[in-house]
Image (tube, rainbow, N blue to C red; front, side, top):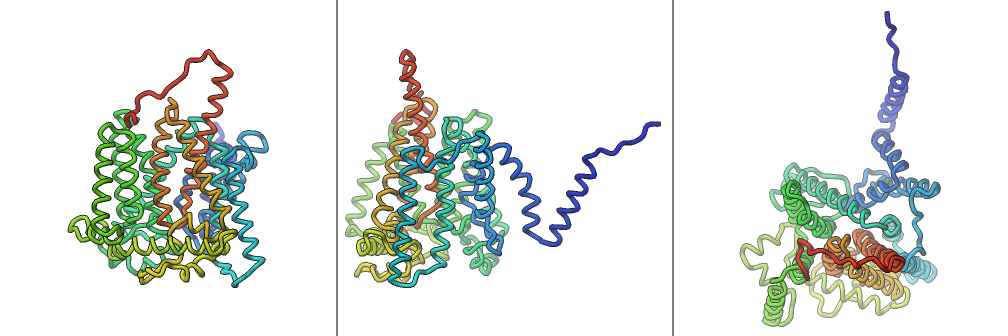
Length: 488
């Protein structure tokens, strides 16, 4: 008669299950997060590349679980632990703030932010708003991590392909969450969401979805960044994958539309025009004719963008497509953004060297609005990221930020005809153009702290390739094959 032997793993599993179940009963959500997060932490310790992917996946996520516990405050320490532990045993690179030109310029930018803050704390012309300051500092902690980790982990074309796939998958998940919000009235915790709970049951088709972002505008900005890469994957995919990818793009476009962001709409129109101009044979003529038509319309409205927007809004079907009950008119939206930008610039000119301090512009820029300002309200932040940085942190921060953009576009240009990176470089170029325009009409977003170092990494990859070609002078030069996007 054979005796039945109990697997030694079963008691361990039972004990662990009992302990975790008891912890969940006693400590609630935090223990539940521990149960889910423990395997993730183990995975990150074994596979450091997943740390980078997790950080990228967290770009649009700002869910607040209460008691100061947010997704970012969970992800950043876990990612830092995974990267540092693997870097100690040389399984992944150290994030190096001096490792490249982009890293050094980025370091100077973040140091200039701290310098301007130190000046503001020392001078204290007016009492600082510590709540806004702490919020901005937390935001910059995430931006610093994203910037340097991206620079460190994108070193090969394979890294680019992998992170683009991760980005598109995150975009699909955001779209699915938006569908749940719009059609099943899902409400996630967060600042914007708390204010929408009272309306979510009474709205029909005009509820502005925000996904997991802090505001619908940020959702639209994130999806507009992802869409060029999704289109790239569609154009390069095998026949079997084209239908699922086309469906994924349709989902993301629906989610983008559900956010009702007119600033992102204008950015997406510009991105489409750039793609047509550079990557299709007939696109240049279409774009030039369209631009001339736009100038003619603008001239007919005395060169007033708000007046032109008002005319477009009165077009029956187009106006309905860009309106929501929760929005100001298109003309009003453009008007306050223009006023906000001018106010931010005037505030910068009043304090050009170090600005007024991180998170403090909202308390001062209203008095610097132009004399022709007529908008009845202004949101809590300057709706121009460049002038927001300039007015709060001064000319040095603005200079280094613009330098980062120059490095990014130069990196994309260096990979424009590379056989491995050209497709990704061109998609990233379209995304960067859209982000420049989007940032000129919205406050600072996380997304650029991924795209800027990604584009800079393209330049570093191409530099390494050039050195290898110098070491092998007999190797034939490579050029990009004709892409599905078409030749410029």
